[in-house]
Image 1 (tube, helix red, strand yellow):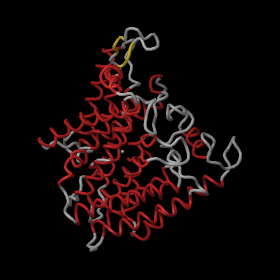
Image 2: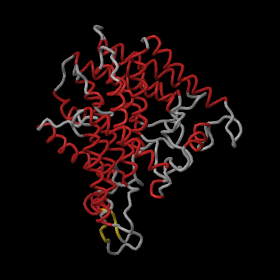
Image 3: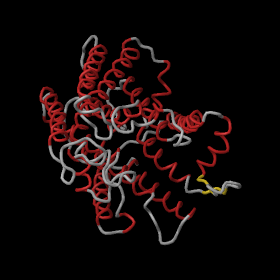
Image 4: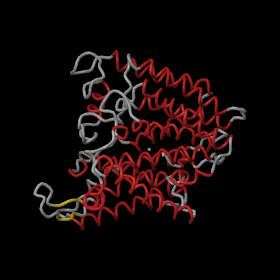
Length: 426
């Protein structure tokens, strides 16, 4: 996930905007298929070990965050209030997504409940993406964070099982920590720390026995990361698993290395190297090679964010950044970039509302005649069944078409925002 112009870069590097836009577009497609039961395998996450192109989306977000930390702060200054405010705003946007479906008002349901949830979403949008005085942003972020923690742990039935880890939540933590490291540490020390995090995580996951399960392992739900998630955040984890979380506590350690890899990419982009594109490409190839060599000993696994996964995903991020920089900045081939830049300058808005819109529209139920298994469907599912699916014999293509239509709708919206110079920042 963006992710955003967490930091809208001061020196504009179009290839970075394109990379961000490509990542947001890929996220939009893989998160919004027409039919979750019929998806092309490259557009699905790996079941456990291994990887697909979809598994690269989230680490690309963290890589871009690292780049943005450098491009937005070339002097390596530290403004504590600004850092805390941005961190909390990103974290709270993630929590706003988690809270959306948990909001209840007595026995209210249907369109009435939807209206309440949309009002809540509008308030969160104004408070967390609105453009008002920084001083107010700081105090609002602090206040909302305290309120969020109180609701999660205050014994309220509606929020007793709201998920606390998440994509934006991890992005906020990585952004906060690597921003501090970037300010206080030399590049050499940053590199050493990036390697240290990977090695420490490898040792923890492969050598430390798991309470209640025995020997160290990397099995689903039985590994050390899963145990720690369940120990620290019982009831507040990924709904699909309930006992562990793919954005959990322990796996945030190697995710820091993903963010740090973006810092190094940012430093290369800011340097006066004559062939910086080749440096990026070579580093990418080296990372991929080492990641693949590590895979037999510590399997590539996105859900565990294994050290080998960090190397492979960061390697592809370096590689793509180098290729884009060579084409756009070095060879000045830019005519094709505008569509990606449109997505790249407002990514936080897309990420947040791509989570809200499907939840909201599928609360609008449409009766379906002659289908006893599905007497009613959410609006999005209904439109897909009626207007898209009938035109395809292969349901995978129908599902992809549904995702593509959603992407086109976002393109229209973002094009209007671009013409009006509307940018939403954290």
